[in-house]
Amino acid sequence: MREPASEKRSNQNSNPRKLSPEKYARLRAELKTPYRGVRQFIYVTFGASGAIGAFIFFLQILAGRDIEAALPNLAVQLVVIALMVGLFRLEQRASRKP
Image (tube, rainbow, N blue to C red):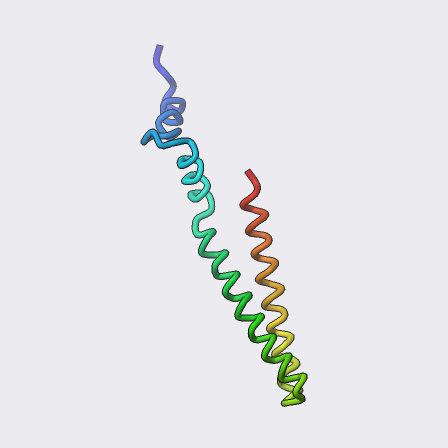
């Protein structure tokens, strides 16, 4: 008796190169979510940039220099930090799901 074509195809795709189960699972996960590491790196670097900017604008406000311009800039930097933390956490939560 012959196997159905769909069953034969699923057997061929299960592990065609006889990779170790751990490596095969890692490759399958990367295939589902490509560039996850790059996105996380971008979130960290943009968050660090926002933190440096927020620190500088905070010091300008403490020094009393150009407060009218420094306050909105500080707010933008804080929003950038919050956004990057939120995106990073969302990415971490998605990576924990099976």
